[in-house]
Each structure stands twice: as C-alpha cells, then as structure tokens.
Image 1 (tube, rainbow, N blue to C red):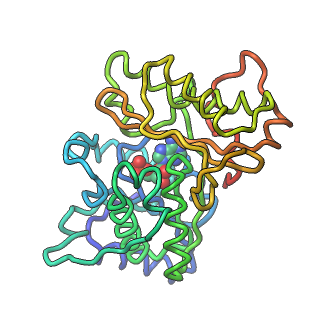
Image 2 (image 1 turned 90 degrees about the vertical axis):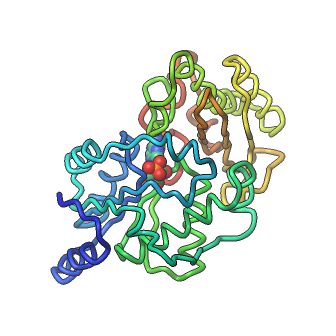
Length: 309
Ligand code: AMP
C-alpha cells in the first residue's frame, strides 16, 4: 500500500489504475481506524479492484474546536491497519492540500436532511463541511463506488442526496454498524471514554435495544417506544441530546412504527459526544423476536440494518 499526500500524485496513480481497466472504491475516513472502518475496507474490496482509503480530519465539519483538538490521530497505525485490511492506496493530505489559500467554495445540501437531528444540535454547517470534503474527495478519486457506515445514518442520507442532486457518477454503498461485544458502536472517539464513562456509554445501544424489545413485545406507538429507550438511558444516568423515531428517508418524526423507522440517538458521555441508531422494522421483529439473554444489539452487525453490502 502506498501513502500519497498530493492530489496530483493521487490522480496520476489512479489514471494508471483506470487505464488498466481496474475499478476503484473509495472509503473516506478521519483515521484512528477501528473495526468499523476495516469492515468498510473489506466491503470495498468486494466492490472494486482497487481500494483507496482517505485519511483526513476535516476541520470544516467540526463545530467545536475542542473536539477537533482532541480527535485521536495515529497515521502510522492507520497505515498498518489499512494495508492489512487490503487497501491499495492511503490518501493522507495535509490541510493545505485540501484547503489551499483562497479556498472559498462550499457544497450544501439544504433542508431537513441537514437541519434535523445532528444538524439541529451541531448546526447544519457540520454537514456542509462533510458534503464539501466528500465532493472534493469524489472529484479527486473519481471512484466507481464509495462506502459509508450506517453508524452515521443521517450522513449517508445527506451524501446520497448530494450524489443524486449533482449527478455525481458514483455508487454509494452503506455498510452495517460494527459494535463492541457489549453493544457499544465502534467509534474513534471511544478511546476518550475514561473511567466509568466506558460503561455509561452503553446507554445508547441499550436504549436502542429497549425500543427493539418493546416493539417485539407488540408496542408500535412511537411515544411508548421512546419512553422505553429513555428509561434505559436513565439507568446509566445519561441524558440524550436527541432520541428520535423518524422516517429513514426524510427524517420526519413518526407517530407509529408501522414500517421501517430510524431510531437515532446522540448523547454526551463525559467529554465525548456519541451517536448511534438502529432501523426498527416491525416485520423483522415479529419474525425474529428477542429471547431473554440475547446479547444487546448483535455484536458485529446491527441486526436490523436493511442495507447490508
Ligand atoms: P469517521 O472516520 O468516523 O469519519 O468514519 C469514516 C466512515 O466509517 C464513515 O462512513 C462512518 O460511518 C464509518 N463508521 C464509523 N464507525 C463505524 C462503525 N462502528 N461501523 C461501521 N461503519 C462505521
């Protein structure tokens, strides 16, 4: 695996790949790779001949300077993990390469997709930072396919909208959320969970599971499901920033879970802001149900994710 830092070098390398008739997959990351990222790289290998992993902590999508400063970084470790997972190229540009002097353009998806949930709490500017950097990466790499994680469910909707609206010639694939054994969704920020906060961080996945169990038990009323999820968070003394049952396409709140519904949660645990989600499907739950003693939300994958690649 080669590590490249300049856009011109990246383009030259990928021109050769394309001339050889080989297809390209892009996995954008902010680094400090974990099993979630590695599962995207593995899925990318199934989707294309060559895999480009980008590693860029994008200042434009951070709404808090302290979060940007504290974001964990270890490029040497990331390079080792990406190579092991089968990536062909690591693109790790410095900030000046992505945002040279004079940079003034922004790509925005407008409306509820960027204003609800994460947008309501972090500000829509977070997503404008994401769509700007993703547009740049897609233009630099010109991949056949780009892979994103269901862990950031709202981000996948925003990016699919961007690609559709701007006729970007790339296929977007969404891979399931990878979790720790106890249910905590993998995140680069988890290393910042000190002391008792690692245990308290279970509030999010347990909330999702509590709603899944209530649904499996026959409750489809959104307020009742949300109350069950909320009670699970109370047990860990964690206050949600939001806990919402919404349409998985347009993020509009739903009153009844009678079709696939996104249950999304965000909460601060100590210094760390965490997000998680699951797709509730009444059918799935009636078919599979939950037995007492089941592990909290499938370790490995999010069992209700309809979009496995
Ligand atoms: P990040 O480095 O956090 O920006 O994430 C890069 C990509 O990895 C995004 O598409 C994320 O949705 C995805 N990702 C992050 N965490 C997970 C996870 N636990 N499972 C699957 N994908 C993930």
